[in-house]
Each structure stands twice: as structure tokens, then as C-alpha cells.
Image (cartoon, rainbow, N blue to C red; front, side, top):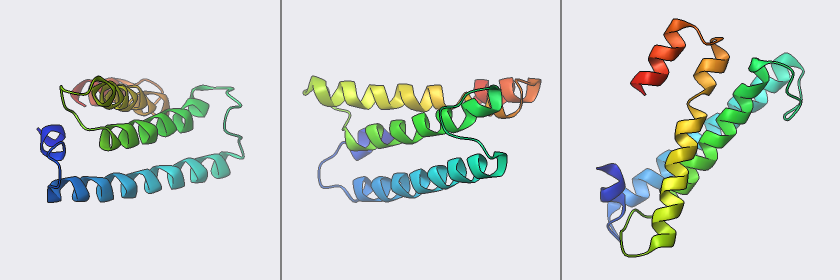
Length: 114
């Protein structure tokens, strides 16, 4: 429903969603930087599951951008493809919860509910 609302050209909902997405992406990038700094790690140096959390968060941020930037309309296939790639990125990024919680029962439940 939100995707359809934001697909209406000139709607105020579109502006609010873009601001919200930009804010969430800034917070995600700060979380990536804080996590890497706290663990004294580098971005693509994957040694354990904890190193996958920043990667998943970046995929989520890219997914939010793609979903918000490309409208969901069934007229233009490129926009629909970009939108669905963004949704796929958000889905893949949700696995950060599993990596962060070491795939405990709680993390599996949270991913399932999301």
C-alpha cells in the first residue's frame, strides 16, 4: 500500500517517504561505521558472521534507496524492476538480524515476522 501511495506523482506522501528513507539510510550508515569501529574491523574483510552484519545493513540501505527512488507502476518495466530489486535488497538485508544474534531462535522468529 505505501508503495502504491508513493507512486502517485506529486503526492505529499512521496516527499515524506523520501525524507524518511534518507534518514533511515543515514542511521544505517552510522551504525555500520560504529560497528566497524567498535570491532576494529574493515568492511569486506569477512572472518565471521559478525562481519556480515555491516554488509547486510548496506544492502538494506541500497534497497531502501531503490524502493523509494523507483516508483511501483505497471506501465514502465524499468521502474518496476528497480522497485522490486529494492524490495529484494531489503529482504536480504534483514538477515543482518540473524548474523547479529548468531542465528538464535529469536533471530529466526524476527526474520520470519519481518
